[in-house]
Image 1 (cartoon, rainbow, N blue to C red):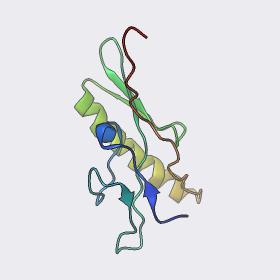
Image 2 (image 1 turned 60 degrees about the vertical axis):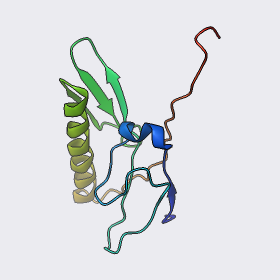
Image 3 (image 1 turned 45 degrees about the vertical axis):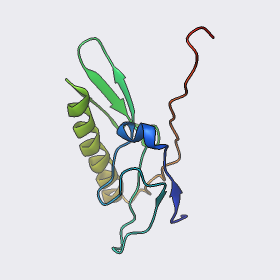
Image 4 (image 1 turned 90 degrees about the horizontal axis):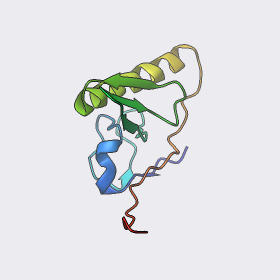
Length: 110
């Protein structure tokens, strides 16, 4: 696996689950001095009628909900950690982050 990964644009860092040890707004994730590599997965947050939902496209089945965006952010971080831990426990490989999400500005009258 390539030790350098392009990260998402600064404007959408809040939509991405932050892995411990990764500097926010950095453009490239580098190998940490430990034996573990830091991963950064794209997370999609969607509002519902009375709560928020989040899922990780690169980790099928890794989803959560929360009563607020902040709670959902916290919950998806726990869900990602639990998902990766379970994959490791069963001897499955960890899918690399490949999904890129961006906010695209479009004129309202387009």
